Figure 1: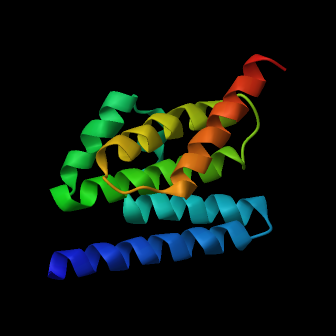
Figure 2: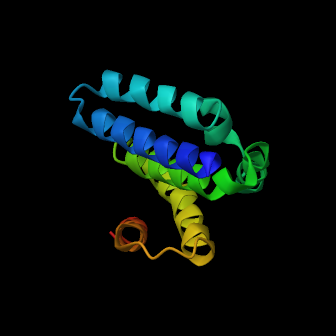
Figure 3: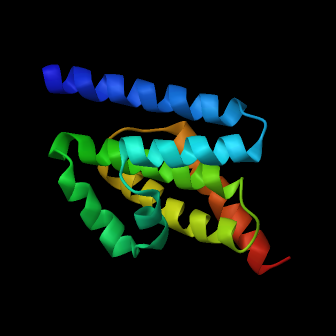
Length: 133
């Protein structure tokens, strides 16, 4: 039960930090907060920007098994939020990283999330728009 309490606290803390990031007005402040969130919840920002998706998926093995899907969702959320902070083509790259993570989580978590489905739909629409302007 202690592990479950830790995971729930970690998730609440992450989403509170994400909300604070979204409330920032200055792009420099948002970028700094985003980098700090990668470091705190996942690992080096540079790794998650440059690694292949196979390497990203393997990186979750460093976390206890019961945390992996939650850490994966944190990364998907960070990619999704960061995509709004970037111009093309970088925002498209981030969306292409977020989508398979959200899809994997949707298939394997056993938890229905309307918010997740909405984000997946939004990503697909945004990526389709960039292919057919």
